[in-house]
Length: 445
Image 1: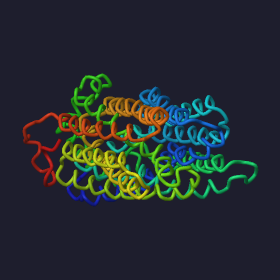
Image 2 (image 1 turned 135 degrees about the vertical axis):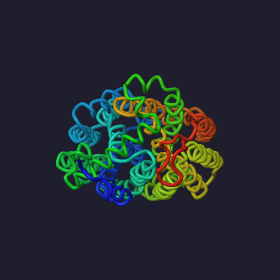
Image 3 (image 1 turned 180 degrees about the vertical axis):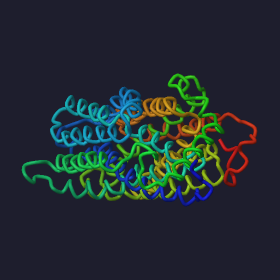
């Protein structure tokens, strides 16, 4: 029998974090850049290809239809073939498709390529979130997931200046700047996808850098956590669909995604229109757009730390949603770039910072096929939100010649999301098994 009394849990979690999160963080950054770089390319693409706001909004949102349709089957494949092989396949596929966006020349080709890009990337985020459940019990998970999720906001910090530089290559080699953007941001994804086959392990049992006693200790902690919070009772795929809290959280996530992609895909254009009114200086706007993402990354880590410290999820999610509502309402009345930028900073901080407590709450309730299916179902429905936000904003802009209607609508949805978040958890009494958990752990939801 392997002795585990000498294992320092805190030190082990720190070592796991340093081993896993920086690399997974890098993978998610390139995923997000490939997903939203069309927002930086939009101003030049629209002008050169003569796309209306409705065409752009529809094409931008088509990604999420492809993603939604294939997210669940792709996520289940993670459990069949293993995280390492399937994540590598996903990244190589979407990297090639992302680079192929350079061939877009008509509304139809724009719609098709964005849809296929969504199909290629389907399963990546659920696969990563499921992967965290193999390494961290739920009371350690919000902080880990929050740090990982900052990649989606820091992708804007990285993507803004990078896109700005690539757009300046306009005319080089006979290609437009936006074509260079897609090529240069797609190829690294393929290379990183290949690296996954050599770097990533399917779980702790394959990790050669863990001692035998650490593997046993970690397995015991994860099993204890699953029994404590009910995940052990919800392990089949059908369980994910039968649990009411999962559907409530899915509705919250739809609202989150509508907001996130309203920021990602329309903020550069909104700032541009409030600038000189022509949308001419796309590279300058790309640099402005990094500020909300940087502040969102900081807020994400702070909220994730707070959520783990107090082992509280629903209140943190609701609070973040209310901050989001205030930010979008402020953006709707902004009449210059500075005020609009500040408003988007507030909205972005609220949106991204809720991801840590949100996924910690969701993955606490489920395990096995139920966890894979539940996370995939939520992200699949979130894909509908990702399509709805850009599409409706584009339609409203063409119909009213103003972005205010879409921004006010997002603010109202965020208030609804806060209300749903507070109703998403099931109260339970403190159990004897709670004894011995870290301070503050045991009754949080």
